[in-house]
Structure formats: structure tokens, C-alpha cells
Length: 244
Image (cartoon, one colour):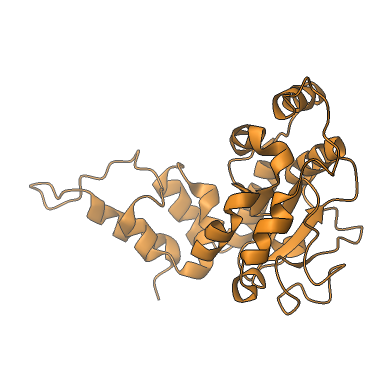
């Protein structure tokens, strides 16, 4: 049985023309990229998420790692290195984001003025879709503190020494049922962190963040700082999750 690295390497060759000598023109500097349809086709769907860490790395190196007998240990160490390299916003950057988000002279809006979109629009997301996503709404602290809390979660990950309550994004029968504080995640805060489909946040991390209207103005800043997370406006969440 061929190992995954060997399968990927042979598939990647198909993207390069054959030389007169009969050999592939793929050089030693070829990179691993899921944008290469031949590489993408060679990877089992269950392993696609883990392969994202190798995007842009040397193809030969990636394939050697995948075929190593201790590849799972290597990948685990690699993940830890990447997580340490992920830096969130500094305190001064957070203050600058407040000014950009709250353009009305920098005055922080009250909960009665903002963060209504998630409560309105998510009512239109069918339970058959929303129940497939594990979620946690950042709603129990002030609007400014919610940004700091999000920054901490995306920078340092979930603190597994403390209870982290989640619930389905919509409905009461999804994968998060029984784990949360309500039939669905809280919607009246500035952010809702969401898992990948049919995953749990505490096990697999945060994949999506629904941004409520208080922070619409800084979505691009959030996306730039945390490129591995998908940020979506609350008023566009129904279409977004329906496509997923």
C-alpha cells in the first residue's frame, strides 16, 4: 500500500509537462499547494484540514514528513510551533481598532444600540444547517472586552483547564447539545465563535467567527491578523453557513 506522501508526490507530477527524456519537469523547488488540483485530488477528505499547515512548503519535504513512521508526532510538533508564531493584536492595536469600529467620536455603543443583527438574521438559518456547528457567543462582558476576549481566544486557543460552554449555532439537537448554556449559542454579543462542520470547538478549535454589527468596520483587520479563521458579518451568516 502506497504511503500518502508518495501518492501526493506522484500526483503532483501530473501538473508538470514531460521532458524529452521521459521525466517530469517538476524541479526540486516545487511547492505543496492545495491549489494544485492533482495534489488536492490525492488527499482524502478527512485529512484536508491537517494539510493546510503545509501550504507553500517544499513538496519533497512535506511528502517525506507524511511518509515518516512518526509523522503524527512531527505534525503535532509543527502545529505547536505554528500556534506559538500566531500573534494577536497588541494593546495599542486594540485601542486603534476601537477608534475604527466606533466612528461616532470613539464612543462605545451600548448593547441597546448595537449587536442586533445576529439575533435577527440567525433566526432565518435552518436548524438542519445550524445544528451542525458548535458555537459560543461572547456576550457576557462589555462590548470592548468582547474584542479582547476574541483576541485572546484566537491567539492562545481554548483554555482546556477551564469549562468552556458551547451550544449549537441554531437549534437544540446538534453536536453541541447538552454542552451549552441554551438551545443555541448566545447571539447578543459582538462575536460568535464557531467550529468547523460536525466538529467541537474544544477539540478542533475555532474555524469561523460571526461578527455582529458593533464591529463590522474592522472585519478586514480581523481577517488579516487571523488568516486561518473565516470572519463573516452577522447579516450575511445565513447565506454563508448555508453554502457550507
